[in-house]
Image (cartoon, rainbow, N blue to C red; front, side):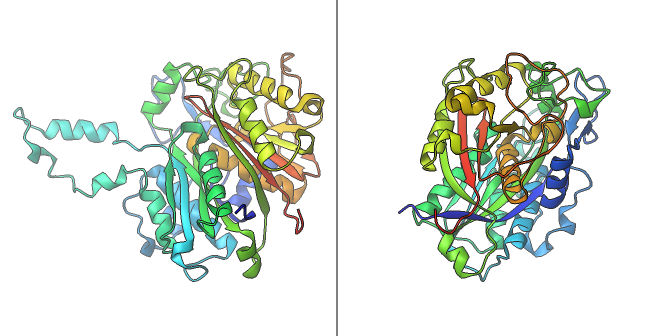
Length: 423
């Protein structure tokens, strides 16, 4: 059917701000949200920094009638962002029939806190009797279900349409937006809440990512300089947390209700490297296919892309692989297209990273301003493209490409464009 799909609302809870406008402002100002970790005790850790959400209380944002008691930290960010997105779009339970409304969310698979497991183990006697668990209500199990936050969002609109929960690591919210786009294109829904949420800022995540060699250990005393995608002195990424959610609607329905249209989703593609679990291939394969596929799906040519919101993690190998892929896909145009990474300011929001990149692209399209990649201090002669170093740049952005790559080798490309009545 290939119906047109537009974005009519955006919400965000990020290390840069507790709503979408403040997040966008920090991005354009080149202001870092990375600092010392406060939610865990990092005594003795090799890494003590992250991009944390600050001073966010979901109960102050969302009415208690929505039902919030089973949400863990990542889910609160997602639900808060969803509530803002719906308000931004002017959508409520009366806007559409519930059967025409769905939810697609990218998120981590939640697991019990290790301290909780320690406490339970201490209660069990030597016979292993199950009644040791009686101090914990059965409803606690709900908190660790991946779809609880998404189900909470669905209740905001009495949605009974499609519901998807995707966990593909750092590309999760990219897949969620892409699959929501397909459902709307094909007529399976009229409105989809789509995006992602995550909070891999627990002590287990910090320790494990450090053991993988993925995190930078060089800037514990100067955290705002730690995330430096494409810089010659990059030594690893910085963990972040947050949620970014968008309202996607079928164009004619959005027009009929007089919605403000922020942008149009034009293309989506996904691919798999099948190479290594944690690294992107040096030749850029996988990323090449997802970029080419998204541009073709949008009916565009590489030269039509004005801005690339890079995956840009700040790891030596992955930034090189992404740049190699961009050069192969864009040819001579790679020298002219603007490229930047919001991870330089927010850290890596993992499952929510791609939806933050989509917020960044939509902001650039609407404001004619491309956020920078901060901490560009030492050029890497192996890269050599325009990463919008350190300061935002005015640019008429008509089409933007979002890259999202993940552990396991999964890749997503999304193309978003300025809304035009005739396309």
